[in-house]
Image (cartoon, rainbow, N blue to C red; front, side, top):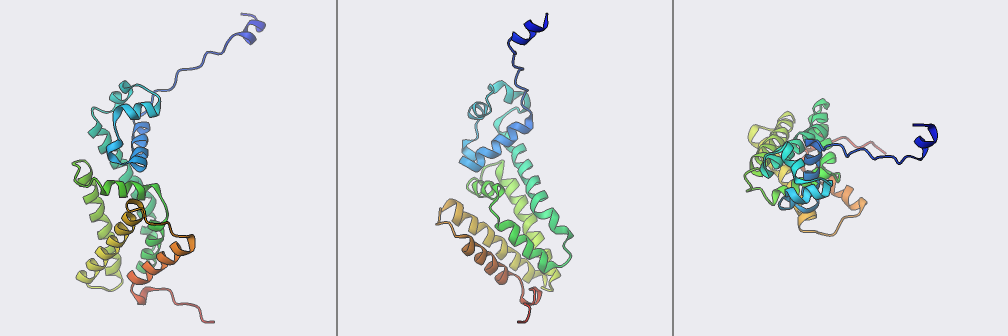
Length: 208
């Protein structure tokens, strides 16, 4: 073929790359965040991704298998982004303060968590949420123990802190209470920290 023919020949588009299992997992999590767990279905997901249902069954035997893998991915990502960095903070009070700041930020992970709370009796969701809650309460409990509380006090405070997190998510995301302004939100987070972290572990304000 001469150069002129090459220049005027139509360009044949390459085929769309086959979707990976990761693409399906990400799409499933997006739908959970946007519409809830019940909206995750094979055919709508395939349409969303621009492929046929056959692409789904190449990677997953069933919807339940997709959900299980998607929630495991979400759990691991949440641990990596929120909790793992806190392990390097030696001071327990500062570790708690940083946790409250991190969990107060608007993150898609919190939206997914709130959506899953509405389906906590689902056989795929229940073990994930139970495991996640136990890990988070244990994390909080260890921090309170390090601040000098006895075991019972530490676990009670840990449950209270976790309940505050869960309850706030439900108030904001499920009950659709009016959104706070930035100042109101920051004031609320500060109030939570002051309420849940013992006075002896709070930073001392600089003298005027």
